[in-house]
Image (cartoon, rainbow, N blue to C red):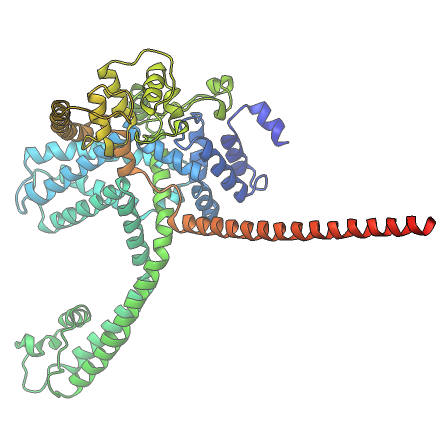
Length: 568
């Protein structure tokens, strides 16, 4: 059944199985999907050969009603590789960087440029208008990406912060001719800074995990906070009824006069909870000291120790789920991009840009051979050029005759063709070698500069060694200047001028969870140990069987000899 459907649809295997899993839940188990993803990831670790229609599969994963199934699917290595690859594209990073720039602009506008009890200046309006348009567009795209699954949209707390910020910016624009209300400005500052944390979490994996853990801890603390608030308010009432100690008037606030007003009693009770500065414990003052002792015992000893233990346990649990939250957030962001038509145009414009994979439409995919029989469209991984195993460089050699000739010559193998020029050799070396061999320039780089044929060939002569070092130093200075310029330009061009390794370092999520990777490693080591024990035992048994066979053969020969003697 599976083969017939696959032949009729002519889709790539992972796409076909994911579609069937999402549409017919009983058709394929989750474990099979995860195993298939592992196999496909081994074939295509850079996720460079996926059909455009795979975005529909990602949409279906996001809209799954069963959160457990969705989280399990997102544990798959191939899905994570696809999400990583989509995020580091120029179009995706352009959106993320625009989010960051607009959010920082809003934060600066509210925190620095806007003054309380004054009108909003035209320069601030010039910041608020494009920020409002951009974030409204982003929120609309996010809503479109959820489609019918609005409950999933409502379940994400960050969306409420987004809507609140949009409302505040809209209010500021509508009332810009009036003086700014100080309380409204305080709220705007708090929300804009909080939103900056959320935007940063979309960019950086570790920040996202921490923010997810913080949100989970806050959510888990609601029952504790509810009970604690009731207890503190109860003591606030009791302090209010007890009143100030004898001889203390209501004007002596710091000596207990705060008990004369219920609002002050509430405030000081919560202040004691948070600060630990207990009142009425310096000496016996009557009922106030008794209440303070009971309050200090409940709050200072019991509840505060409970909350410390509670946070520790919760953080241990949510730290494991932080990666799940990160990948779900990344999935939602990728689906948002698919809902933005303008982003698709940008993607087509930069489809051949460095560091971004190219999508393959289904018609093209039909004509292509299986993935194991064709080269990846992505630039291969960098390799240390101090090695000698030619198999590690085969992907680079397949990219063209220049690569093939240079690498075979460099590694000391036979080759056919003319050696590339110096500039081409330098370009190939910079493109193939790992960064540690380029910055700072390595011994191999200096040999390329001096037109040495192989890695083993040494630079002879003090003057040539001196020239090689000077040229390397000049190259290092130029590289640093170009690197700084490229880093700055990358923020405004969606990382177009950034090398793929930098984007992977900054924005890639972990394909395999650390704990799961460690478990797999332990499992592999255990399996290997078991194999060794089995092999050793099998060898021992085979030896024993051989000895038994020899003895049996000897006995049979003796019996035959006795039989022959008896007959004779």
